[in-house]
Each structure stands twice: as structure tokens, then as C-alpha cells.
Image 1 (cartoon, rainbow, N blue to C red):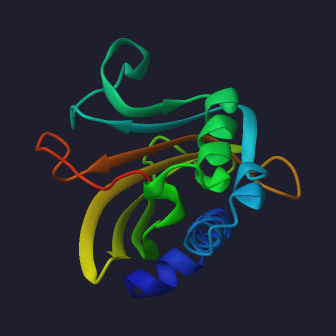
Image 2: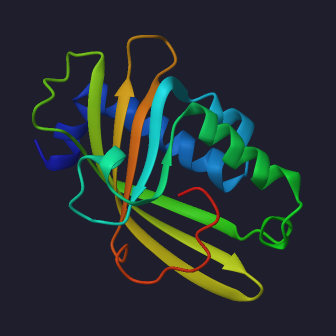
Amino acid sequence: MNDIETMLAQPTLVRAMQFIWREAELLDRKDYGRWLGLWSGAGHYVVPIDPHATDFAATLNYAYDDHAMRELRVQRMLAGYSPSVSDAARTIRTVSRFALDESDDGNSALVTVRSAQVVVAYKRGTPTLFAADLEHRLDLSDDEPRIVQKVVRLIDSTDTLNAIGFLL
């Protein structure tokens, strides 16, 4: 079997990949209400500054959103009061290089999936590229998976970043 056949023979990974691609599509369409519905109530959306951080509550992050903060972020993005929101970038996400965390046996309801993401954001005639390693911790116990934690590790997170007012 080649690598693709091996990957597709893992139903847990295939289900997680489909879910993560769906999340990317919702974000590109700016369907933030449905995106909020993908989350576990206790889930965290994290965009750390330190590429090696693991204790996100004790370090500085671009985003460390619990349920209430995710809802507030979406409210700000939909309200249109800020010029950066009313003139929000259009985005296209590509997510690839999926792998189940080696500590996951594929039979657990909680799995960690690592992947790579490239986001092209287009605003005012200028495309901007964002590349990141993603880590999704997913609860697959129900018919509808839920995000328990999403960590977006931007490859240039320690540089000065502009225009990251949208969800990665």
C-alpha cells in the first residue's frame, strides 16, 4: 500500500480530515455562526506567539479564546463597526499533510490531528500569505465531531504580523 492508501484505510483520520476541510470552508465563506457550532463548549482556539509554547494559559498568544471569547470575536467580525471588519479580507484556505498524533490509537473518541494550512488573504488588491502548522483536538464520540482545541502555529509568529484580524 502507498501512503495515500494507508491514510484512507484509517476511518478516524478520514472523518477528521473531512471535518477539518468543512471548518476551512465555513471560515472562507465567513459562516462564523456555523463555525461556532463546530466547537465543544470547553474548547480553546489558540494562536500562540511562541512556536514551542504548550502552556497556552501561561504564555502570550495572538488568540487564546474560550467559548465566550470565540463568540465575542465572531460578534466583532459580523458587527461591521470597525473598518477592518467592514473591509475584511477574502480568504482561501488549503489544509493538507494530515496525520493522527502518534499517541492516538485511532479507537479513542478524542483524537489529535496535525496538518499544514496555507491561507491566502486578499484585501485592497493585495494578497497576503499565512502558513501554519495546525493541531486539532477533536471529540469524535457523537455523530457530529466537535473541536476541543485548535492550535494554529504560524511559521512567522515571532515576527511583526499585520492583518490577522480574521480567524485562522
